[in-house]
Length: 303
Length: 252
Image 1 (tube, each protein chain N blue to C red):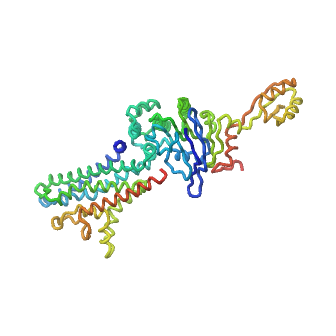
Image 2: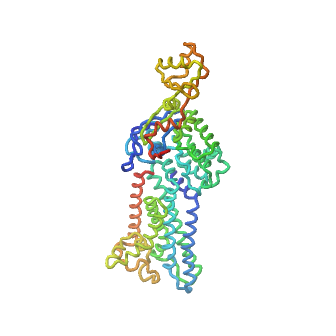
Image 3: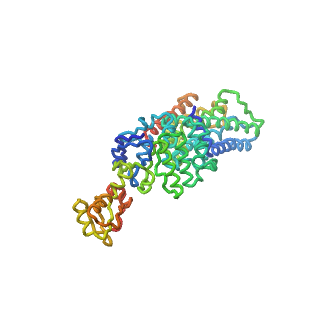
């Protein structure tokens, strides 16, 4: 489990992370979502003791990172796949990491195998494609068989195959009971990967909830109703306190009601329904609505 | 011990230490070979054999030591290091020990290599190492390199970028300390307390025994020769302590 408590980071007068508190539970993938510049990477660096928080702290299984004995055995992190020496082979890179935390040399071959890099283990990491570097970074994170895993934007710049591979990989890790925290600036990606979401904007916590709750709450559900007896149904729905709008080609869009509730009203009043379909706003729209005020660098569109 | 092994793996799994060592060897021994070849047989002295090792090759070793840490910053492997070993001080001290040891061994190889080449090319010269001063002059090169490596690593940690660290080290060692002697009246007095001048003082052969040497000429050192070495080492360690404190406080 990861606990962030009142985490704050200031660079001069700029506040990068502002009194951030949240928890990350084991057994599921938690998405760490926010626009670019929201403070995700800074937060993750503070979790790992790389950056010093201005205030607050992070506990990993009850201890700050710096106090973990042989930390790679507890926490595996992939913050940047390019944190390797370009003239060092993939195997040598993993070998010194393994040595530093008292892990056996055969563990290096195991993780190379797990990410499918055995063939190129002797090659210099500088010649790796982004996808291969990402796999090497994941191999490094897995080295100590850690209970807690942190990934910063792991799918950035990957091809669809790589994205699916990483997504499945992370879900499998969580299914094994590990704590998995993944940051991203794409809600659509997180919707497919994470079951829990911690959303931040401008360094402040916007929400922590399950992914479906977050999407339901933020996309403003409406239901499209098509019926030959709309003139009868419309007022009945208004009476129930739902908001009704005239939609395209003679249909109604109802907000504030589930399709179940509308169906019940129709049946109780003998109204024939031709269509009853819940509509979802796009995830991007929802995300922009929520974090719109919290985006660091705005680009004005269409003005 | 684990951390020393880690730093050894890191150092020897990249190419730059091999290239720097080879370059230092070629420059150090090569210069002696050229001098020996162009001097009449029988005229060579011990002081001349260490000309390359104590000046040119030393600069290469300083660069090698600085690179051992600046490349870590450049490629952010220092962050990977601090993730694996959150105690930054012990990680950096381990690196310093490994690099200084390698520099020391390299220094002995270059010093005795230069001496051997001189003996080979100028068999009639009196190059026997008899006195304590002569031993110090040749075998002391290793100590000089080891301490120089500590100093270079400290600069590397503080500056964090290769170009800056290398420029500081080379200008400091090859130019600045020599140029300060030009300042009227106080110049040579200041020089008596500069680290690399003291390093040269440590190596210097007893006056009169070595006319061709001329190292550290005109400076009135207040310290004994071993005192000068201790002073050089003290400055290197002090700078390293400052660097370690900075590295500990700074965001990686």
